[in-house]
Length: 174
Image (cartoon, rainbow, N blue to C red; front, top):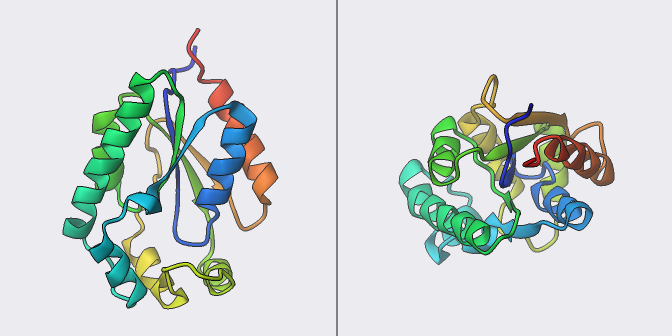
């Protein structure tokens, strides 16, 4: 018997494929996609665009909004998939406090691959110079409940989404 997972967070550093995997997973599962970056306040976007890493205070209000979005989607009968870096355990706990049974799919990536991918993204506010700060902040979700770790360096988007979909299906309510 698996614990039911009402919603998922696709997490990891910039360039790991959170948004792409989240969208692909939503297509596979019929879930509702919530793009975490779309909820950053203008000041956060300005800081990141300028190469200034966000701190806990910057992320706190943003995480509150994401919690509300997850709860709103679940209350509407949807199964949401949130793309969100969720780099620290405290950020993940903040999200878990809003949604009991929240699942996480961690897209693990090397710094070199992350830097290359971010440098190749046209028009995104996150500059490649921020990759080091992402890895400095990252607390990998080792031994955390309801967490699937996938190697985003070796698998493509369809493979990652399929693996996440299969895992999530194992955690559907009876």
